[in-house]
Image (cartoon, rainbow, N blue to C red; front, side):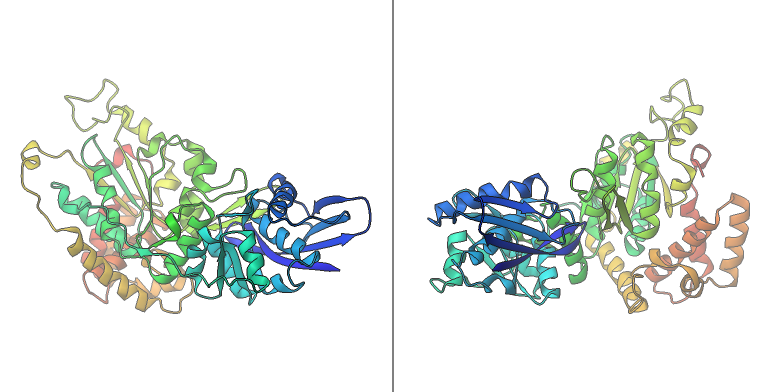
Length: 507
């Protein structure tokens, strides 16, 4: 008899179904696992054998063969322990032969039979629902898996409890979803003194998910401004929270099984490798651009990042996803993020200040920012110079609009876009507009179009830049409550495409 259990192998955020087949046949006693297992899966036989011994279950003196089908799909991770154990228990008739066939199972076994939490419980639960099965997972992973709401989730503390459940000696109650929380940062835009133009750029970026580049001298507030961008972004919608949490589940970033409605804010250091930023490495794990999906990716000191790393950002910025290609697989991760980057105008940082600039000024500016290629710079919708803050401003009481006031305007603009793009597939915000939809929905009035054409010719704006100005103008109009894109909206969008430091910036 061949007993079966079911699980998944992860290719990015896509769970691929795997059938675990177990046969106990006459022959020289052995326990083998076939079907392209990695080292962790191959070692499952020792963990399973010892865990069953802890349950006082003796394996028969026969040949045990476990096949992971499809055999040509690579199997990676310790989560195969539990389905292998269930298939074996069914094969030796400790549990009913078809007990596990109605479930998808994943979990790592300790040597004493307890179940250890594993990565990927949430996407596994979604896969189980698609297969019209329930999900069996470790108790520590059950709260996150239950967020799918699409299938029954059994969170088992141990293999003993699971055997009792299937043999009628004890019942495991369906798991309840964990906490849905909003992470309070305690930050506010009023913490930033002055910098009203940069704050306006943050508002526009947040409303339409437009990429923003801040350039200014050290201590002018670039990082401070960037850290407060999440305070004006609306909470994740239910769909966005599920998308983001599935990626974070694969990376082990869900705290105590809870899901956050706050948008992710990722700020990798400039020494991060290419695999850390875009994904890859052992197991082709998601990188920072995918962990920032539906949130913010902040790259401080942008010119200090390796050139090869920066160039890999160009394609996901345009498409909203990244494909990590390996010899045996092509792994796809979503990567629809708001990119905010900051840089000093030159290596010493004081190019605009003749009294403090280094002897290489002004040539050092073009050399330093020249590390950012023209095609990458062209993908920033908003470019803002952040001037030094006057000492007289530092002593003033907090002023300007607080984050909740700005966040209300951003939420209203996003609500307009949600209604506009309802049923439009992958288009969610103005930053996604392309083709005929862009020409129709972001078409400026006659005066605005004439201004845009003159500016494009005068300042050498590329075709991509032309379309990005239209998208930004559409967002400014939404913030203004205007159904039409007027000249004033186009003018402001163009002003954010240019900067007083433009002579030092490529593109």
